[in-house]
Length: 115
Length: 112
Image (cartoon, rainbow over all chains, first blue to last red; front, top):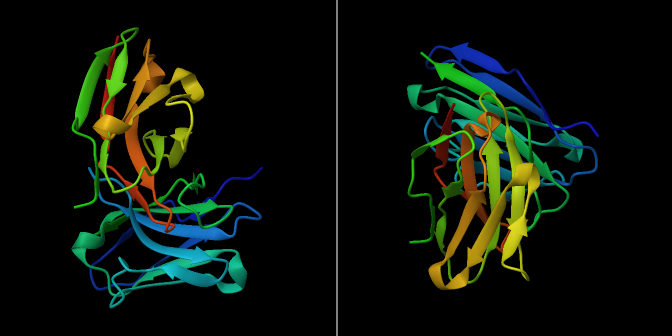
């Protein structure tokens, strides 16, 4: 079974530039998550999709971050414009359903450096 | 405030020694409890989980964890640590409302 795929693995941009990350979840997984993991901290949920609908985006900085999951499969997360404090690893995860008891499967992450 | 606490930011153990990583949570009801491991440059991998029943759960790679309701704890243990266990360990809590929270993590160093 293929795991969660993410690209790119690394990205360096200057502040005020824009960037986009891509995630392809495990086939058949209805729920997709984007997390932000700042160095030395645990992952923080940014947005959760159930199929192509948003379940929770309460911690997504909507003035600069956006995400979509067209057709309920892969997803993109965009930052525009980026700030220095956006430097982090962005993790994508998927699970069969949106439940707190469901195991989440994680991709390798995208390490973003904003200079 | 609701939280997941991992009191130890960093732990160093000798190879072959036993290991215990602490996790405490503060939520009203018993949540679903998880331990994940993150090796450098990798995503998170599930070690074990607890939903109900036997409070001692076994996971992969020889890890186990014990749920103690009275202490709101879910500590991770391993009897004999291997050098390959060096990684970041995260305790996580899942709630019935689809919410999921991670602790701040414990970094494990294994010395020969």
